[in-house]
Structure formats: structure tokens, C-alpha cells
Length: 183
Image 1 (cartoon, rainbow, N blue to C red):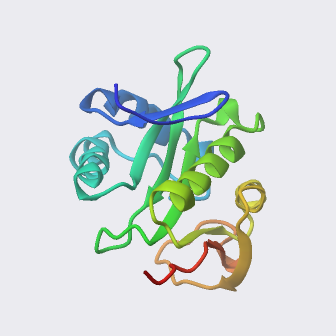
Image 2 (cartoon, one colour):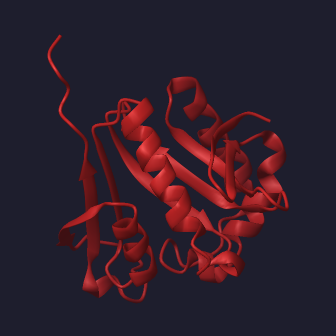
């Protein structure tokens, strides 16, 4: 098991092929998917697209998706991510997290997000962390704020099949690190 980061209660490790069932259960929960797609992610999509994409990220650089494990029990809780830009670069990354509904409200999202942001700036050369969610997703917005990100804007994207709440827009948050120093 390749550990990326540890906090007081969490262990973030690389995903492996053996995590398919964990991801299927996570993305199969309607509450977890409520503000994302509104429906479960098909198993075949996780097997052929989602998990292989996570595994490819490890080859591209220091950022990506990590399985979140509760240290005291070894239970899979979900995942955290610093998603690289389209070119695989790590200077600007998107903060992401998806946890099982059964552990919501326990501070895991904030704990993991804060630790990832700190590691990104302190060790990985990140200059900007950003995140977005539906404006009505107040719990996720609170996590972003507690992780140090600040509100940037509300915007309205077009969706062919919009979720309830889409009419209120999407929100973007960010945190910028120090500018690089000249040699």
C-alpha cells in the first residue's frame, strides 16, 4: 500500500485495481451523487474510465486521486484529490473530495482537504488550488472555506439535463500560494 498522506484520522493512499467495488458502492449512493450527476455511476464506467484515469494520474506527476481510509478501522471512506490541469501540470489543481454519506458531518472532508492543500503548497509546487460546486451545495462550500479557499464567483453553466438547484448556478473558490521566487 502506497501512502500519500496521513492525518490524525485519515490515511490517503494510492488507488489500486482492487478498489473497484469501493468506488461502485460510493458512486452508487444517490445522496453522494446528488450534486454531481444525480444518478449512480455505472460499474462499467468505473472499471473502464474512472479507476484507470485515477491510476494514470500517478504516472503524470505528484497530484491525483487518493483513497481515503479511516486509520482506526481501515474502512474505505471515499476519496480526495488534487486534480492536475489538462496538461498534467501541478501548479494549478482542483481540490476534490467524495465521501460516503454515512461519514458526513464528522469533519473528515475538512481534515483531508486541509491536509491536501497544505501538502500541495508546501511540498508539491502548487501555486493555486481551486474548487467548484453547485451554489446550493452548502456542505461542500463550508468544507472549501474551512480548507482556506475563498469565494471567487458564481457562474451559470449549460447542462442538457440539469439537476435540481442548477438554476442557482455553480460557485468557484480558490486559494493562491506564494509567487515563485527568482533564483
